Image 1 (cartoon, rainbow, N blue to C red):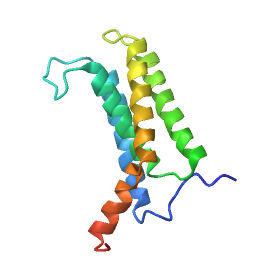
Image 2 (image 1 turned 90 degrees about the vertical axis):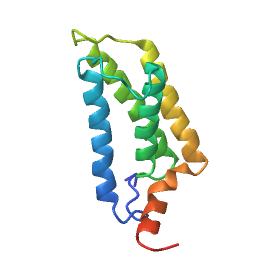
Image 3 (image 1 turned 135 degrees about the vertical axis):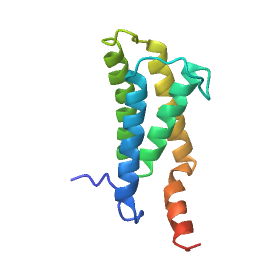
Image 4 (image 1 turned 180 degrees about the vertical axis):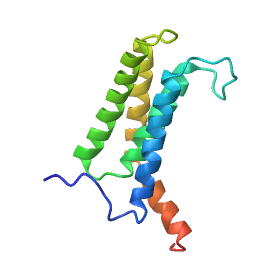
Amino acid sequence: MLHLIDKRRLRYWNVWFVVGCLLISSVVWGSLMAPSDAPSLISNDKVMHALAYAVIALWWLQLVRGRVSGLSVVVATVLLGVGVEIAQSFHPLRHFDYWDMLANLIGALCAAGLAALGANRGLYRLERHLLGHR
């Protein structure tokens, strides 16, 4: 059996798991809601897609271990984006967009690159800081 989950490193792994699920839920919810006229912090839709999927992928890359599971996170993140785009095609005020899927892919790949450079240890560092371990 593959051990894809790395609970040994993170003391509050279950909390981080729930936060990760909330991140996914908020992106899916925001993607399937009717577009609003409310101002956004990021005006470029493709940049927002890339950032959202980079955050999701990088978050989950901190909760797994190994190259195989890391690749699984990136693939799952990209498939999430494809699924959301398909779901949007059934929404009367949304539409299917290949460019959005490309932006999602770029975000997930950027997260993988950042993780390879060590950015996937942020939660571990946060826990050590909060618990007083240096």
